[in-house]
Image (tube, rainbow, N blue to C red; front, top):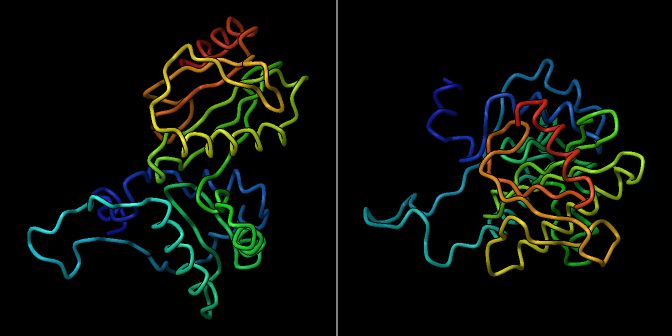
Length: 235
């Protein structure tokens, strides 16, 4: 029954098999998530729809659809449900995020006070080693906001993963405000930089599951090394 529900989109349009395992593997902000799924007995599923109770000709997506507002509304519902007895955590299968009540509020409360988007509650950031000298980090879940996910390939010795994490969030904010699509070959500032030293590739497939459209960013001067490393993993 669970597989059938997934196959027709009942866990969201961007959920992909293995999302829970990947979320546990990359739950940097909440380490207990690594084993939280063991022993759970069920789940409460939150869905939004614009046709429930509507007319037969009601549009599936209204003209004034706002994905950010929808995610904010869902987050408020999640906070309320996390207070219910027996609820262990929040899992977003589309953004592969796991949080308990306390770790969620640690993000939600300051973001609410400062009127910032709680992106880390909707979109996870993952870290891998692409080669001995190249690090790889990406977002998963930006499609919920109707923008592409972002991959960053960088020399491990020259960039701190924490700075890349912050950079990926900044690029996500930039994409949300952009009124056009990006093109391969465009230049962009690197982490903490203002000299357009990085380049962009617009791709229909990322390096690591789930399958999704991405922007791949990396310093221009390591382009050949990036392509060699990606070809070695079949990308």
